[in-house]
Length: 317
Image (cartoon, rainbow, N blue to C red; front, top):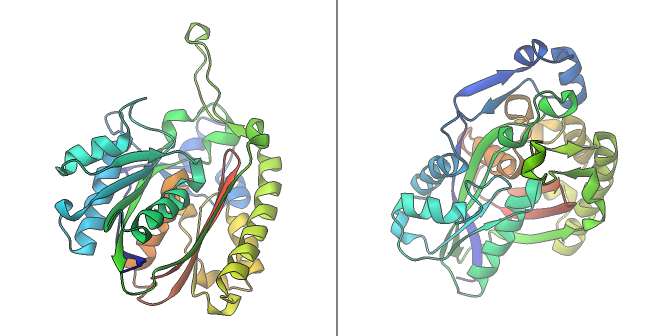
């Protein structure tokens, strides 16, 4: 049992949908402009009483049911988020309590859009060292809570949601390899600054989009090369690309790098927007539940986010 395999997936999206048409009424933008630049048509927005832990809990229930296990079988919870409910305790602990799980380790990971890949990487290490058997890995973000809806360049991008997987010890190969990186030198290009409370300035996302886009495309090219070189897997052996959903043009660039048709890319950005740490597990769950992704197929997940952080996971489903 020295492998780590995904045995269940789940996801949750808030019921409220914010369309591009809705944004047209409050910003100097158009549906056509947003779609052409980003690929986004709509995004889900959490209600005022919906916290990150609420989104996470619902996604976790789906993953647990899909894996056909009980909450008591889970012996570790790792939750990737940049929008925790509170400064402390961790949102993972809040979810643990709601699931009724007693005393297993639970903690949050913060790597923004790469958070789920980071969390999956950590979970695999726990399993491979026999420190856990069933890990609940969640990616969840309430990006609307840190979005300035008067900022045209940012308001169009972000959505809320959560996705989860159960990663379990197995005799079968599951995670083939993971690769994670960070470079703090680019902090000012994409960040949420802390303002003094007396200033009455909200702590919201600040991004230099064009610079981030260029670095993201080049960096994801490199992570694809690194993943293939280290795994011994060829481009033609990859069945599905399940990428972080940041911009349709980035998804298309990565698919081109892999000589892959867009028909083999799980695309949710048109309906979800950028949900940060939630985007990969949301897309994975959609791919699985739609019947596109089936057992024993090879999946490449890759992401790029603030920090900058970036990473990949090559998985046999």
